[in-house]
Length: 233
Image (tube, rainbow, N blue to C red):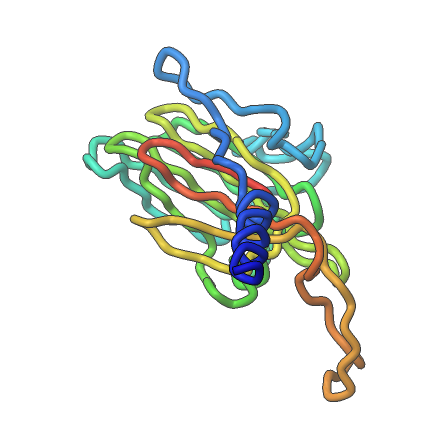
């Protein structure tokens, strides 16, 4: 009986201390517009929105279009062009420096990577995904786009989340991430850490590798209806 009570008590303690807290909305809707929360823009970079594209020069650097993608809302009422941009004459894919969104000839959004290059998602997701972006439909007219950055050895990649709502696009999340679990849309969910640990491995060419920190905070972002939720534990 005493053993049973001890097991029950330990289970309750684990439920209280180990269970992730309830999710917090990453952004808000107000009067049909999307507004970011400052706490989720974790990487400060005043130059990220230098939207000189498609002007011909910015500090003598020309933006080249590496690749275009056509995006649609679920109701197919809005069509967008997503352009991956770079500063080299020849395509540097899978690396790129910035991206832009257009409706027809009207540019609605431009954003650069805040830390090094942007990259296809293989680095951010540890090869769980190799696309250049993820599209998560939040309702018939609104969707989120997820982009990943380049990992600089001991540092996790940058992850940017942009919510596109009609003729508006808003950066709602920008922080470090190393994704350890991924469930695709329509049940979108990612789990990630922000910190990596060095692990010695004699078989590795570099003598070891950086892996997700085992005793650091874990983070999760997932979709609930027309919202993206966040929690950490």
